[in-house]
Amino acid sequence: VKDLSRFARNYSDAGSLIDNLFVQMGVRFISLAENVDSYKNPDSVSNIIVPITNVMNDNYCYQTSKKIRQVFDYKRRNGQYIGAFAPYGYVKHPKDKHRLIVDPDAAENVKLIFTMLIQGSSKRAIALYLNEHGVPSPSAYKVQKGLPVSTRGYDDPMWGARMIHSILTNPTYTGDLAQGRSRVKSYKVHQIEAVPREEWVEVAGTHEAIIDYETFDKVQALLQRDTRTSPKGREVHLFSGFLKCADCGRAITRCVSKNNNVYYSCSTYKNRSRTACTMHSIKHERLEAAVLFAVQHQVHLAVSYSEIVTQINSAPIKKSQSYRLDDLIAAKERELTKITRYKQSLYQDWKDGEITQQEYRDMKA
Image 1 (cartoon, rainbow, N blue to C red):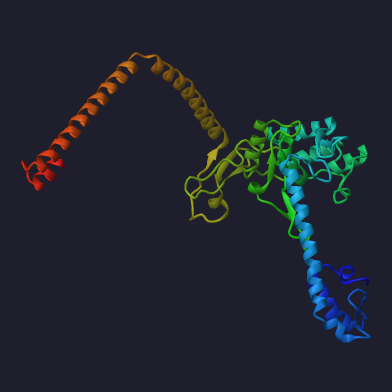
Image 2: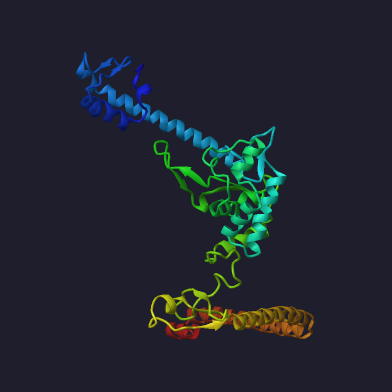
């Protein structure tokens, strides 16, 4: 090699190869700049300059990686998109690669995905629907349009639940740029790891939104629910993810009897132990009627509450009560002023010798 930096930048790998593997395999190692030749001058390999040079070369990589990360972080905080590929539903601006503009065709599919989930479809059902209707996956769509595409997703022409989940949880569709959601562990270890939400770099209003905030927040709340469908089912049932046992706190599962009667029962009693909890069974029709009644009752309370508040605000009793409180405050302030004056005169009586110190303290208290 010309010098040690051309051989390796990782000092641990370089040392292991030169000191161990090359010796075991009988490999002659020559580095011109450092005058290292393991055949002609075996002692040159053990020279202190070799590991020091390897460490310096490694540190150069570290400093370069650090500077590049700082530049990327600066661009993120300025609201510049730095990803290699635009998210599905957007394309990079032809005159500014750091800006995103809406791709109308793909944006309609993004809206459809959000709408279907809100209407009760599972992520698996959405993927099946898109595949059955011939909607190309994000990677296949980009290939058709001649757009840049990641080689990692190129061989996956069909939709999957993981793709749907990635789209549903991406805040970029609200018009806010969310970057730094993943990172490599270090400049030596190129494994990608997820970044906690509080460490993301989010800049609001950097591009046109495809999904409004209300819809996006509603979808995130639905995704937090433990909602599952049967192997052949596609729609999430009405109470899926909402029902909990009042005693053990575990989920209540949906069951169908031989007569096609739907009921709900405690999963602990059903699947774990008959002694740990009780059946807690309730029919679907009865539960639906009870929930509907509760919702209607809450709506009635909300409407009547606003009317009561309006009456209170317009009632004359509020004014008379306010006057009464003002009079009480004024009386207490006068009493406080009188007590303060008494305390001052007490001190003067003590100094003049008219009362003793103990009497002064008792009266002051």
